[in-house]
Image 1 (cartoon, rainbow, N blue to C red):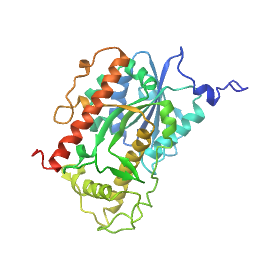
Image 2: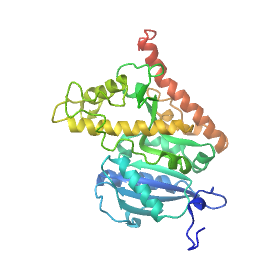
Image 3: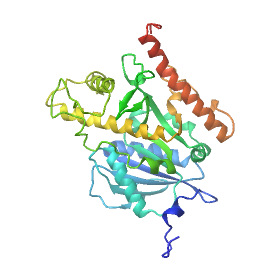
Image 4: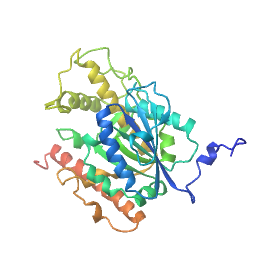
Amino acid sequence: MSADGVPSHDDRLQGAGDRAFRVLVLFLTFDPEKTKGVRAVLGDFFKAREGIEFTVVEIDNANEQREWQSASTEGWPCRAFAVGGDNTAHEFTGWDRGWREVRARLPETFDVVLMVNDALANSKPLEALEAIDADIIRQLPAQKTVLGWVDTFSRVNPDPLDTLAQPMRIGGQACRKWLCTTFFMVPRSVFEKLYPVTSFSTANEVFTRYCPEKPFRESAPLSQNYQEFLYTHQTKVWRRGDKRGYVLSETTFPLFKNKVRNILNEHALSIKLWKLGVGHVNLATFDRPSRGLGIKHDQVKGSAGTRLRKLRLLSWRQFFHEVIPPLLKRRGLRSS
């Protein structure tokens, strides 16, 4: 404790002890209508997790000049604040700005950090959130576990990929799976090692000025198979309304760079995360069998610690459920 009574940095790093278990929510917002929908989803989620003390910080990337203020009038069932963000690299630079504001303004210790953005309500099957009860959340720091939706290249690519033998690489570092940054929980002690979460602010080192046949620099820190994946994902797979993909042109090149930079930041964040040796719970295990394992959240029994360990094992089953069939298909050992 400092002389003026403000908790020191070391005080903040202490465990929960006998105090309330605290979760910091870094909620990245941009679209007002999407924000309203996610507020409602998160508000219900918080109210159902008794004994957890949530603090929300809304990071407004649409109004970077917004000063720190209370957001209690927005209908949150917990303490809430709002502050301007940084939209340079969308949610990633926004979260970095939000975390700096939290460190400067909120002296208390947080045990878990929930990262979420306003795309949540439109992009994920929210029934999976029922599997996350208060006791599971309390176990995350003790078991050094992150929780969210984990994707693989096989899950998002139309052609079979053998990423076990030939992983995608950023700066020489392998990437086989990644944590979707729409919604994820991470122990605060782990999050502090991830900061800053932005790896590519402008990504000028990645892209050419404009060359549709060769959008990536020869010196780009991306493996060739990764460059091919990114190009295919944008021009053939990514969905905009009823259309998939787009023709890369001088007009669409800024869109291509923005979308690819977001993917790079998401994947680079997970590379840092997995290097820390954390376990993970993949909420995709609760997806329908065509996409996940079809596990019902109430099928996982036992104490909170036991349930979390089971969920971690199921998450590895989900990983192999996604990557093995495409691998067999690529090698001609499976037709579909």
